[in-house]
Length: 326
Image (cartoon, rainbow, N blue to C red; front, side, top):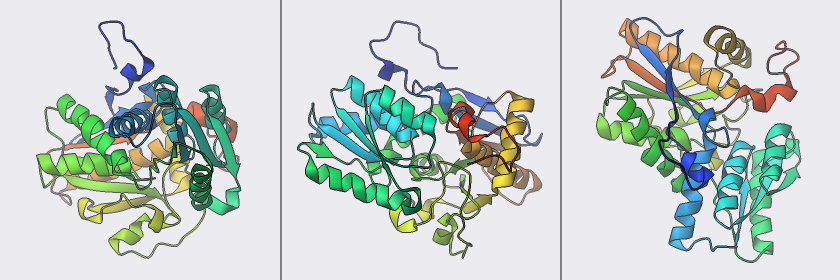
């Protein structure tokens, strides 16, 4: 659990150092651990990149104090950037496709940011284009662009991965994480491979997403309810490095929905669908290590639970699968 033995000067000082907790459904022979990122002040893994990227851009002079950060985001990144911007004398504007969580958009506004919606049917691609259009219209405005900015992955290389390795005394056999921008997995994968080149790395995506195209597969593109991971256009996923990934695991909406409920009812984990997908994939990798199908350096698998189910209650995440809006 995050602990602090002395008073802190800013909410930004509470970002990171999140708990690493066992997934109880893992096989007896191979432990699975999840990094609980809802313990961050903005309640998601994206607080890490909000703090890290804005501080780095200010240090480099790419962003001036009093300037404006404009980001296309499904929500959690906006909360992370808004939280950091409010403490770093930066204005924040976010471009969000309409269908994404109302709770996230309300929180961005509560943190002082402006939210601009784009049509759901135009996808994240239109949100990205609109962000750059707005940046051209304003003085002293920049688009960090989490989908292509190396600082995204660097944040996890410098913070998330070292925390995991410290907690497990370096004994990490496999890294499994969902890919939206892919920054979380890429940062952890790079760090992991530097510790041991044989570390097994698996990316997680919903069925209907196209990340597995990077591995030479030909997936059937379709809509999916799992929020925050996956892609419909691999050209936007500039951070994903196939050489750091051993496998891309697809998880169905129905399986993720069931796992959301199982994690809550059996393990007390109030997490959302992207965490559920990661949990399923991590357990699968653990099973394959236990059976000898995967030769990992240690009998441990680590994944990330990016945020809390509370962000998705209005979308029926705990109702029946048919009622879940995704």
